[in-house]
Length: 233
Ligand SMILES: *[C@@H]1O[C@H](CO)[C@@H](O)[C@H](O)[C@H]1NC(C)=O
Ligand SMILES: *[C@@H]1O[C@H](CO)[C@@H](O)[C@H](O)[C@H]1NC(C)=O
Ligand SMILES: *[C@@H]1O[C@H](CO)[C@@H](O)[C@H](O)[C@H]1NC(C)=O
Image (cartoon, rainbow, N blue to C red):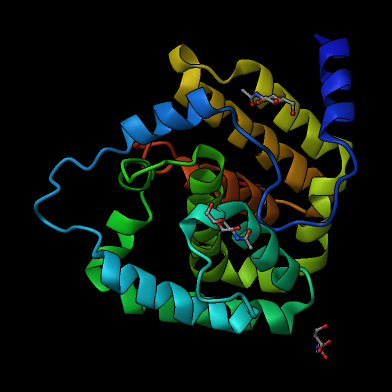
């Protein structure tokens, strides 16, 4: 087990400061998530594609990304947004304002568009790009809304944490345990692992809650009812 974890650390390779958490999932796990995200009542609200494209191009302008960039370029969007988040707190606040405008622009289309099931049911689905796309916006939702005061107060420590072995160990363990028959328990365990590790690195309890939620929110629609605990210390 220990040697497996060490091997994975090498595979993950050189890591950089990151507020959007760096890790990858294989297509079969992304497909499982998409299946679990299937909207219960698609008739209530749907993703309006014309509006989706319009709001995306407006979002892209802030980052200097051209109009053609869409959810199909999810990895590129993830890396570009990450770069701006890691510049400084001023830029992070601007990214959050841009995210709020995008959210308001989409209105009732927001959640139906930011959904793996919706995106992967389009022609020529691209699993890693769709996953990186939705987790970019889910990560922004956490750090720009519920986690905003914590990320502004602790931008440096929270951003640097994913370069540590403590982070890589939590993610290596997730990599080893996540599977169809153990999906939500693996998410829960990894959230708890990150909670303890962030607390140790950046101070309890706010940083642990931030780190756990920042991970968990990506799985909010595929693991209903999971919650991160605020340590009472
Ligand atoms: C965006 O995705 C499209 C479709 O996969 C691809 O043709 C295009 O080259 C991508 N653009 C960038 C900048 O990666
Ligand atoms: C934040 O980063 C941007 C881009 O590097 C830079 O132009 C700006 O001066 C920085 N602002 C502060 C307050 O450091
Ligand atoms: C585990 O990590 C490897 C190497 O980065 C990657 O190819 C694989 O998709 C990951 N698997 C899971 C379940 O995360």
